[in-house]
Every structure is written in C-alpha cells, then in structure tokens.
Length: 119
Image 1 (cartoon, rainbow, N blue to C red):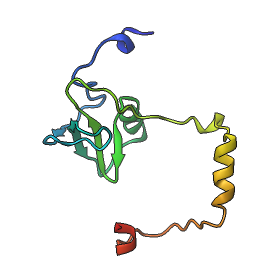
Image 2 (cartoon, one colour):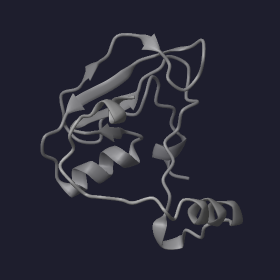
Image 3 (spheres, rainbow, N blue to C red):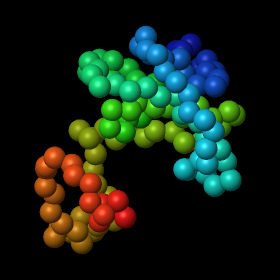
C-alpha cells in the first residue's frame, strides 16, 4: 500500500483536479437512517476523461452534470463500488433476475419528465 492509500483524509479526500467546489447544507442521509449527510459538489458541464477518472477514483459520484462526494463528519459508511466489467460474471441469482426481466425494453431517447417517471 502506498503512503497515499494509508493516509487518513478527514473529512474527505482532497480534490484530485483543481476545481472550485461547494458544500451542501446538512440533510437527512439517504443511506443510513437517523444520520445527517453533506456533500461536496460542483457543476461540470464539460470534463476531460482523465479528470473524470481522477474524480471517480477519489470517491466522487455523478448525477447529471453535478459531481459530488459525501462529506460526512466521522462517517465513511457509504463507499462507492466499481464493477470491473471485463471480469464480471453474473451469479446464478443475477442470471435468474435477467431471465425474469427479459421482456423489458430499453430505449435510448432524449429524457422527458413524465408523472410516471417522477413517481
């Protein structure tokens, strides 16, 4: 393990790329009941692939154009997981779920809000 991997980064990892980021106000944690959460976030309309990879490696997540990272005092319970697709092999239960849902259709289109999607 490198020194970088063993060093404690509290409250969270430093930004891997020079970027202005804000911190959200405390709100109910979406992962753990009874806890509060905060995020460090910024809007990224454009980002190079290299910069994006650095942010993902540092535990950031993305929702649309917002790149964010949990910044919860004394808590590291919600860790992002990355699946190496080249080595992924579906388990028996995952294959069963895929068979049960083989009637689902995927359509790529411009996203449009509807009540069904909102609900």
